[in-house]
Image (cartoon, rainbow, N blue to C red):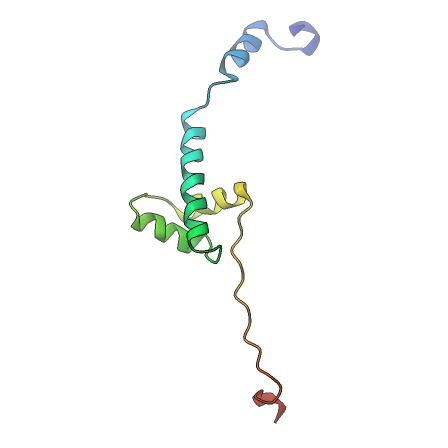
Length: 96
């Protein structure tokens, strides 16, 4: 089978052995993802990566803004944009 696929036998068995194991980087990413998601939902989805990074640093997790942004992107989290203030036509200064 290895000859058919074009890989070395030792490489196949090494891949099979580490298939179920998770690397330290992946487990650290999972922890960061959980903390970022929790902070994101505490702020009701209104904060982006810079604000969440500050919040997590205040909580004692030394984390970079870019790391938070990557975590948010992996999870599909986006900050909600602030709604613009719309005045009724009678109060709009531009209409006078």
